[in-house]
Length: 233
Image 1 (tube, rainbow, N blue to C red):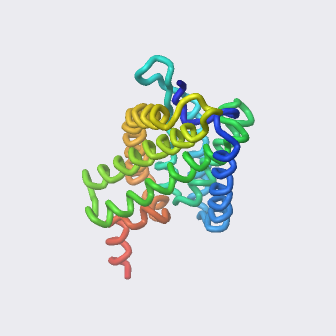
Image 2: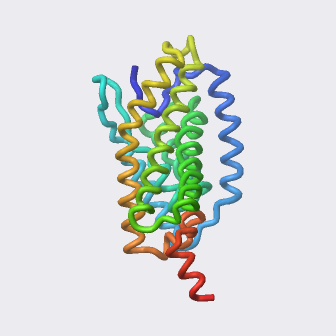
């Protein structure tokens, strides 16, 4: 069983990939309507899209020999640009990979976008907002919040992919009892790398370009930006 989170054509039953498309189209419509980027955020969106386009093409062997996994980038893009822009960015990556390299299918584009561009983007943002509200993180607490958010998003995106595959029997050979654990175990390992990369990216921008993060719908809630806003009022 290949545990790449990009699901190819022919792996999902029509009912599963159709349902995924319906859900995803709703999120696409809302995301295009809600996305509003500043002049400073547009180049960052292009840079992050290109960065994770390349990162997703690099597949890493995990435990069993043939399975592979890769970084998703949804947490990084979602936290930095906001979930709506993040959804669009990841969708662009998935479309280009499917058309140019056959990495992920066209019939399964809705499912892949649901897993990586919606679950992998919106959930890390939600986890971050909840943890940041509780911990009011700065320093180590902030980086722990970033790490956990990215890790959870990666693993839950993989579990969603495993669920879709498991529900697609007999189109897909394995049921939920095999597909879900396989995806979860593999991506719990790559999720650690996802968390570290997200921490490094956001930490670097906090030092070099805090003005970009200050415009993020998610990261603008950080105490450092809130304190700055209060001091100027």
